[in-house]
Image (tube, rainbow, N blue to C red; front, side, top):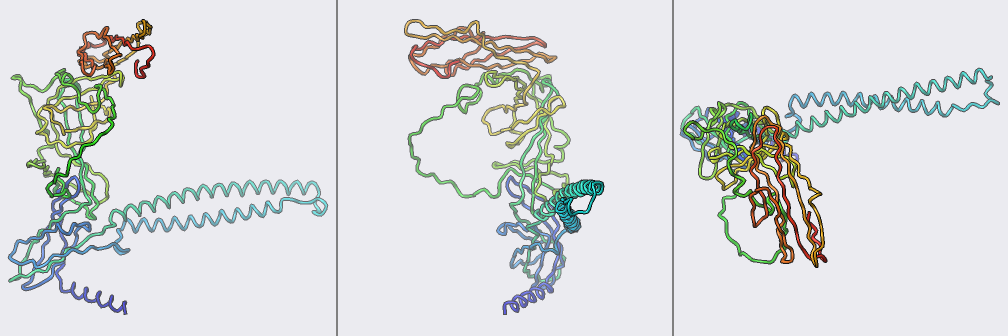
Length: 538
């Protein structure tokens, strides 16, 4: 009975489709969001007079059905819109998958044959082992014949063992090939596991007309994220910021020669207004940690931001912002909430769930370069670029590759979520600045005076510039700050450093000539009761 009902339904569908107009949609453009994408298609069909059904195929199988929008260029009425997924069957396998499955079948047959040969040789070896003992009293063999039999057994044993080992190596390679082919098949099927879909329209037209339908919808199986290349030749050259987008999509459709737009908005973000809940106060135990400035989650003091080296000014002292030819193919549209990059160059983005890089913009911006080092935390210097008026670049937080003087030197991160007038971009470590921070033992001591203990510490910091040009360096260290009345800190020497009384941070602005070595010294003493211990004193 059930089979009869299923057959009847199938027949009804076939009859219904036989009277429906069927056409394939063409993907024209895609707007990719940080989480999702909007796909825009067109489909042409000759719509007859009266009521009819239009089936539009070649639609993504991962459609958010609530987002489907359909329009037409002729005077007709769209009475209903429905979406149907096409689930993959064996008949929908690609030629590549079919070829891989044929290869897998052949290799599996060879593997089974190899296993059979190994089993046969192993049995032969077992028979040889079972018959290797020959008793002299009933064998009828003389010594010479017995020796020949022993030699034969040894030789045959070696031959079989060699063959088994060879077959086992062959089996391992065949098994690896089977696994590799199976993984390739699984990967390619996974790319298309959602299949495609089709949109079915019920329309009413007063005349027969060649109609172009426009179809748009949102899918959440695509996304893009920013990535940057930061390039500069030296600290006298401008900074090149190459703005790229990594696009990943698994919509079931290959995006072939489509116009791409990358948007910073998120279609899945809630549109509901926020509502305040009751704000309760309670006790907590703070976790005091320190960064290189001496306190937790702190930004660099204003003194760190001073100008060291600059480039990018014209003769009148005005900044030059310069864009490369890549930007000529990209139009940026800004709103109060987001930015959209429309790329005129057509791109191919396959549905393979892998990242594909798309060039968006390339800027050549004036930058202020500075070196920064905190040898107490890290004995290397970092090159930092300050970029002014960065808001006009429409940057989004993301990782960056650093290329200095044509050499890849590492990774950084661009975070434009800043309220400062300048954007600070780390360009990585510069190993041509040699920095050492050493304790001067001859000027370190601990002594008792009455009921107190006085601990004196001296450090010397050496900076050697092995570059061919002079550099300016912001050098940082710190003095301890007393949190108890019984603990007294006395500053003995800080080599003309700027001192922050509240945090104890010391800052030196050093200009170091090529091959020059400069030294600064820190010396302080701490007096505290001799029956007490200070755990972090050094």
